[in-house]
Length: 358
Ligand SMILES: [Zn+2]
Image (cartoon, rainbow, N blue to C red; front, side, top):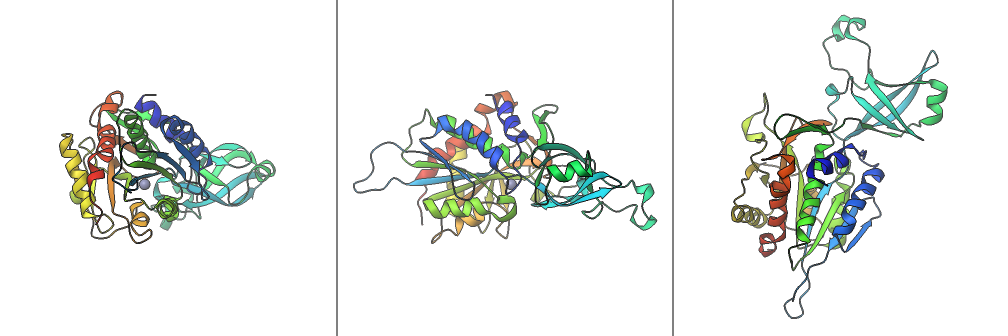
């Protein structure tokens, strides 16, 4: 599968936070031939292990690196089913950090007893009181319209059901793509390409790959997996803010200029140094991301598992990190197998394993 098709498959499969069954099944299918062991754990994360090979120091234990990319996406949850003269509408609330200002007129899929397409809408501004006409819509005014009468809708949908955004992945000009759930399926794609490369590359360490669940709502899957496997090193791969109009330079990064390496309280300086060294050895461009406070990615919970695990964060710049975003690679998607995700994979597989735990 080429990289565009891989990302298309990954992004168009629904997986709202806490409802990752469909996307976990797809990633299971993709990862199965690439790892020695694969299972979905008690909380819903997908964990694969590719065993290391080669001689260990006497009495030594094979070290392990955990590479985490969350598979859940921002979504919505049904909070009420409204009867309006026999027509059914759904009230919703956010699953994860959804920007409510961008919801109006978005296509969605309601995951009830069956999947039902719908549209998020609200009264037009001209029908609102004058003092509300310039305001963004909120969850008290937005509804999902599926076109179904109330009687049928209430049979098919229950309060608590999940709703995913419904956007196809599209190629824009150049090497840009746009679609929903790029946060964080582009990182799942990068980890997949890393696994493909490892098929031809001997490695001493066990490589544990994690498609974590419920990152958007509670950083859950990375916490439980890091605790279970207690790896020597952990890397979170996630999207970060891309440069666009009105973005401030220190907090946003150039699309196509390489992934970011985070400098933050929830990363270990030795891992940062290892990532940089790896990138340099591959002549790969990277960008420095600085944060004075930790949190916001799987690194936050991996770092504090057990007595602490040295962690790093690698970011893929993505413009407008909302349910629908734009991302880029340095070259075209068809060349991406030799581009950043690949070299990133190599950098994880080789020089990082020499980064001493301390
Ligand atoms: Zn993310």
